[in-house]
Amino acid sequence: MKQIEPDFAKIKILEELFEEVHGINSNPENFKSIGRMEAIIGYYAPKLTAIHNAG
Image 1 (spheres, rainbow, N blue to C red):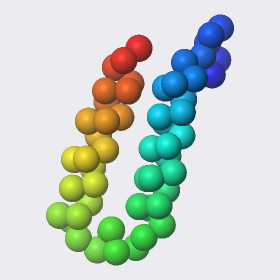
Image 2 (image 1 turned 135 degrees about the vertical axis):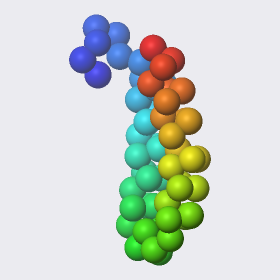
Image 3 (image 1 turned 180 degrees about the horizontal axis):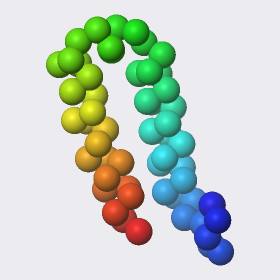
């Protein structure tokens, strides 16, 4: 957002991911199993890394 011309498409994707992750964080069942937490991280980490590395 601080860029002269913010990448609004990237911002929209990040906002959508924020909503998804917020829903996951709101469900205590997701924190009762290491396997479930690893699955969540395994799913979202590559997506966030790709967005970050996209420029």
